[in-house]
Image (cartoon, rainbow, N blue to C red; front, side):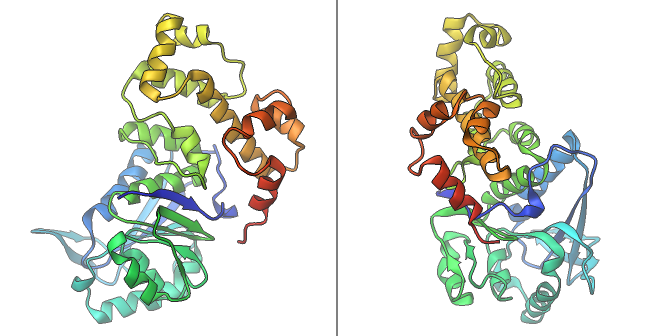
Length: 340
């Protein structure tokens, strides 16, 4: 799959948090004909996150208590669809091979979603799961996406939705739809960052030996995970330190010491492995920190610049102009004006 993530807004229900004392509740809609990686990819993200530091309560619910899954393998232990879904942080709808779904089962799930989707803070679909959600009418007026081979069908199923083809995922309100197959991993990492903070998502991405693809429309995740698609533990150690405190006054010699390298070798190695100078890497994180503060606080740009490690407002504007077309104040208003 090619393309980039596209995010319309950050729902208030999923603001980043570094707190680890609450259980995240996840329900998974299990339907016959399920695409295996659509389920396993996102679940691996949750499994890794749970093993590292976060508690998750995952329920598997569906119209059948057991179903064929992959060749001779079957899945059992599925809970019947509850008449009323308890409050969930996430409702995950993996994709299905559409020709393997009985019409009566499909209609049952559509009716159940219409009655229960609002009980989840976020509804996430993978691949053709978007088609099922579209048939409920819940995507009317929303931006959404699916696998590139299913885009025309999505437009037919949801003529009032705003189908977008150039993304790997889109978030619009409580709905998070993805292009399918491997992009379910990217999308779950995105949700994990929203729900639990970028530090945990970063740790999971590293454990899974991957990094999240970036987007000009949604730089938050990319800024923290940019330049992390490598396996050099020394450089990862330096990046971890910078990510933990981007506003700190970082000096190349101290970073080189953490990497157990000479300063000259460190600079060359960092550029070779990450594709950017260490100074540009630090500035990128500081700008992302500034953007977060601009959307989550009413602070002045001067205070935001200081808190983000950019010195003063003049320096913030100078760094900002290198990557953004809109001035900071205009960008800030555009973010705050996004509909819920």
